[in-house]
Image (cartoon, rainbow, N blue to C red):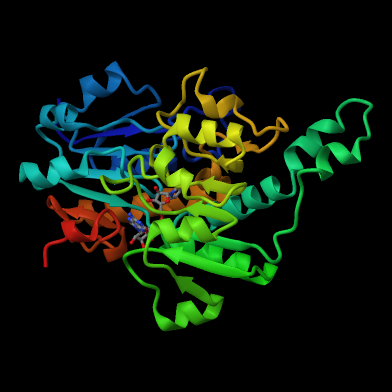
Length: 363
Ligand code: NAI
């Protein structure tokens, strides 16, 4: 068999598959003909087990997605003797062992479609903040019977205006969230990031940079997480950090599930330390049936605004990340390797972005 093989691991369209659902394994980003025209065979699947182990061995290119993530760990990379390019259809490549690729010295590149779903996620984060603070989901659920209970919802519902809102990570998504929140007239917009915003961006939203994460969480009524998952953010929001949050704060995480310790978040919600937690990212994905975030709630039985990992994969986002994958592969197939700089996570095994740890980038 030819070594010119692409392995694509995407989400399952199944009974809901339509031609518009470009991100499904069945539709393979709408790129089947494009792959064939360039002489590549394609294995497109949503299965993350044996199919991957079998086909990664001789694949030259692996396309994967954060929504149905296949964990491309050291063992799989070692078995992938022909591997040259890993493309993330979306944003966030933490399902790939990036540090191992760098250490291995292999000239494997990892690219993602930067910006393809940043608006989609920022909108979802704002939606989640509003849903929690307005107690919207329990209010909606309450109209399904014959009840009309204003107090049930109102006892735990507030305005966004006048609140202090903070983001951990002020990159593309974090900043878009700040932009969208500014018109709500918050008391303050805070951010924590080792890469400061420039003066123009700072003054546009009137954001205040805070030097330590502890200070950030102790000042904020609402915190949103928008940093990538890497060795410096894994388990960052744990029991200890949660103890420094303001009592009754809200936490929204559309970045990655493993940035939070699931049990610690559930306990904080139960105790009242957190009033609400929401987002669309879990670890692992899909989560087990008894994952605490499926059922956790605050003392009123409210405060849970979780969805499956869908914010960055609506139809607009799918169209953008499919086009972005085609652009990356055109650059690869033609041998020009003229990738957009912002899409490069690793180029020939070396970090091309500071987002996964500024210290990992060669000077
Ligand atoms: P970005 O690279 O533009 O921004 C990330 C920011 O986080 C950077 O400014 C970086 O300096 C900062 N950062 C990194 N480590 C940090 C730390 N320890 N503390 C504080 N800040 C830190 O990335 P973008 O586009 O904003 O995406 C952020 C993350 O959101 C992605 O890595 C991904 O995990 C997640 N995401 C989720 C999606 C979803 O569907 N829910 C879709 C797209 C992205």
